Image (cartoon, rainbow, N blue to C red; front, side, top):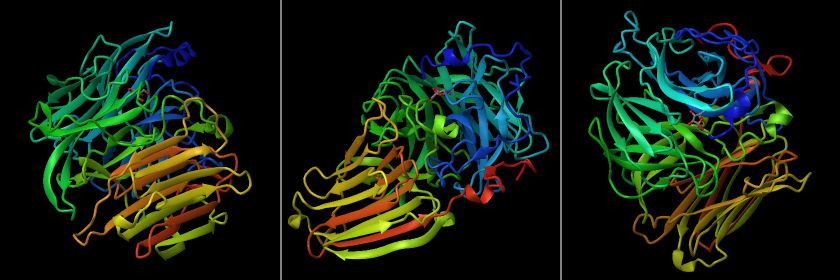
Length: 560
Ligand code: FRU
């Protein structure tokens, strides 16, 4: 993000603590207790993570511990609804949908040195020496970004902090920085383990290099190689991720494994602002080599940035990521800030592996992580032969959140016309607003989302139509094709997974009135089978509200 820090770097309090293992605590920021939040606002998602209050951006430090607890840290300005004053907020979950807000995990070391993005690992073998008596020690590695009183940017260095209580509270290492720098554009370390050493990928943002560093102990780092400019540059590289993934065949069997280098670019993405691209290749412990010259994008919308992959997924398994569902072009302007006192949502958790998609080759699949804990009533289950429509009033669904799945089989492509379509929309009968999506089964086979009919936010960069092209497969040799979509809508966010997750679209929208009417129309040919399933989703926040409707978070025990 460029330029915005001037706003935040104005000195508010005349306290300055410079010892490297101390922190500066702004008196307005609570310590040792979570920030309380109200999750009932009409734009507040009910099955997604959003911060209790204030401004959130990138997910940070994500790991899963040995008990199966998922830890999500995130860039947080606890004192404002725009970026600035960056801390690491923290939340935990046992199912990736119910999140318990925890006390803020990382505070800035000085008033105008911000804790920027980074990652965390469980140092179960005590390579760092911080954890002589335990195997659940956590080390966070992150960028400290200095700002001067005139608002100009100082150096960005890489630093560590360790946690002896499983990731709930951290101490700064007293010999920071672990990777020094004079550059003001060197940030966002993501650490993983490779055979016998740690590996960090870090963005030299404006040089468009991803530095690969190695370390035996998370303290001493050696520069190993640069992944030099690749793909789309935008005007900065940020938040690199580097992760090994299984490659699966059409039946789901693992046939190989490959590394994915994901790079977020901002600003200057093709759709405007921020986006994430990725490269597939191999890694030898120091150097990453791409398998091909292809630049792939993680999303066909423009609201999925800086996603991070959880550390701690056992080798050989699918990876899991969550992204920041926003775009720097308008993240600090969206109406939730003034209306409800919070800004930004994390995407749903997504399961990732690589597979060969028809025609376009290797892609990273995005599947929704197991929704079972939040699935509620079956609102509709229909099977149409050839064509059919569905109109569903879901105003009685308290969460306002739905899951929709459409599976189309027995598609005879020789019978398709330009009118062979599936249309799905969500509308507010009260305000006339409408969010539309749909697929054309013939021609260039585009899938689209149109948020232009939603009226609660007007911004020149909040562009309203997104599409992709999905070459769907002709199944198992009978000449008949099949296609599917899965989607989640949750008050102000729509996420769609097209054709088994070959394409994913993440789309924010801000209605003036809640959307409560689902309309679906399928028009194919006799013999085509369209199966539709609609479920309501249970609010994961409502369970944690007190009698005043406030979610206090974990105020009792910092380890549950
Ligand atoms: C990406 C980013 C990172 C930086 C963080 C600061 O959104 O700009 O590069 O570490 O946000 O909040």
